[in-house]
Length: 117
Image (cartoon, rainbow, N blue to C red):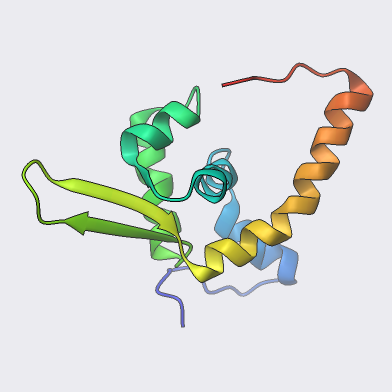
């Protein structure tokens, strides 16, 4: 069982998935880790323009609690902390890929503005 505090009741699988990934930054954090592998906190923040330190901290902690992100602390001075995807985080990203393709096509079709980091 995943350590997260979310445990329903859920209406359907989409409801359960949205409970875990709700919030503007969670999916983007997962995507950033998917594309760059292991990242330190400052690297994550630079890769997500507009996210506040507080919001990034909160969402990374929730993703860790839900078993999607791994936090590795190295016993060094100064301390080094790295974040990466777990197997569950990787499989969720595979599911999000088609959603990303849909969004990219929508941006193209509607001419919506796109941020480039």
